[in-house]
Length: 280
Image (cartoon, rainbow, N blue to C red; front, side, top):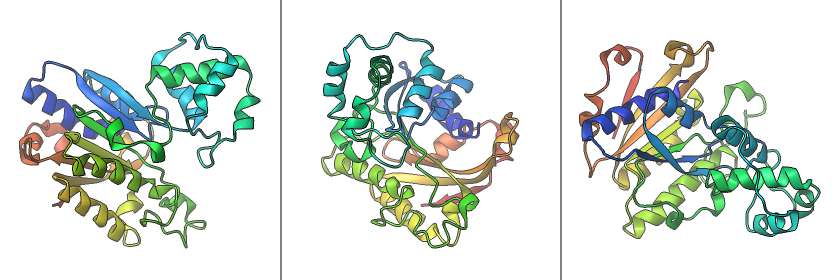
C-alpha cells in the first residue's frame, strides 16, 4: 500500500533517533487499518494507542484483521447498551445510529462490537474527540479522512461540492476536526504529535480544492509543523497489485528536528518514485 511511503520516513526517524520504545501511533479515520498494515509491512515496531472510527462495519473488520478471533466482551446486552449510550456510532459511515437500532442488535454482535472498541481503544466519533483525549507522547497521528466530496470517481455528484471547505458540513470537511483537536492541545501548550501523515485522493490538490488545502497547510505551519506533499503515489509502484494513486502529506514538528534531517535518511531506491511538492 502507498501508505508505506510515509511510513518509511517515520521508520528512518525511529532508527535515526534510536528510540528505545516502539512508535506510539493514533489512527484517525482508521477504517480497516491500512495505516497499521503499512507500519507492519515496513517492519516498524509500533503500538496503536487509539483508533478513531465510528462505522461499526469498519470497527468489526479492523478487529478481525488485526487481532484475529478474539473473545467478545463478557458484558451482557443491557450493560453494553448502557456503555454505548455515551458513544456515537454509525452503520453506514454517514449518519449516526439511533439508540433503538443498536437495541435491535443481538447480544453476540453487540459483545463483538464492544470488545473491538475496547481492544482497539477506539474513540469512535471524531467530532466528540477532545484535545485532552490525545496523549502528549504520540509520535505519529495518521488521518485518512473521507474522500467522497473530493473524489473524481464521483465527479457528477461532486460538481457542486464544496469539498473540504471549512464549515460546509461535508464528509470530507471532517478534516477540520483534526485541526480542532490539535488546536485544543496547542492553545493549552500541550505536546503535539511529532509526525502527522495525511492520505487522500489526488483531487485534494486540484485547482478546485487547493485553496482550502493550502489553508490547512498554513494552520499546520502556525502550530509548528513543516509540510511536504507527495502527489500521485501509486500502489502498483510499491509492490501492491493494484493501480491506486493517492496524495500524501507528511508534517514534521520542527521544534524537534527539521524535515531535511528526516528526509536524508530515505533509501535512494524510493526517492525517484516520489513527486515532491515543497510547502512551508
